[in-house]
Image (cartoon, rainbow, N blue to C red; front, side):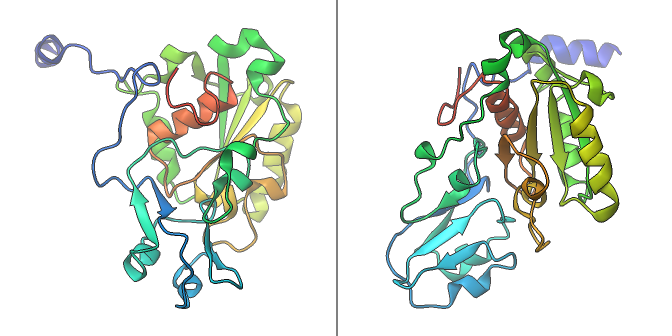
Length: 255
């Protein structure tokens, strides 16, 4: 106990101040993959991706669906002049279209009409209750979600609280590609949540299916925010929750 007291006195505050103070990702962190060049390619690069996240049109222009990208880096190694890792945390988006990277992609113009929780009920901005449901993930996203409530991230300081009851939840946090046995529990959970409510898909499996060809959560339920990554970092998930609650807006890094 004394050791922890001394450590606290020595290090003082260790809790991140994000989003009030931006928290840059460390150099070399693989937050997302960008299409670094719009030049046409002649190589069969689409076949490099194990999840089919890469498409090449008739003119040889490359597009990447970050909702299906598992950040394996095969495309970066095969064609480093076109693809590159980006060291960023803020990868969440409010539509599938905004997850696309490449020629013609314009995430800023892809905002959906569905309002945020803050638009529908301003009093929830400082008291947002979150229900998490695992629909068949490999467990990686769960470790990152748990970290949000540790002393460093301390998401409760922003007014987010976990709840075991969907009837008390404002946000449904979904991980995994939705296995057959989990479809009915997921639909029932969403059904009993009171309005206003939001659904946040966390991880590549939930966003676009990842290695599972049948797709993500939005084939069953409406998704308000997508947080891609395999798995996404805690700050990325926090960013997605802040988007869902209207505390941050798309394209805004800090508030």
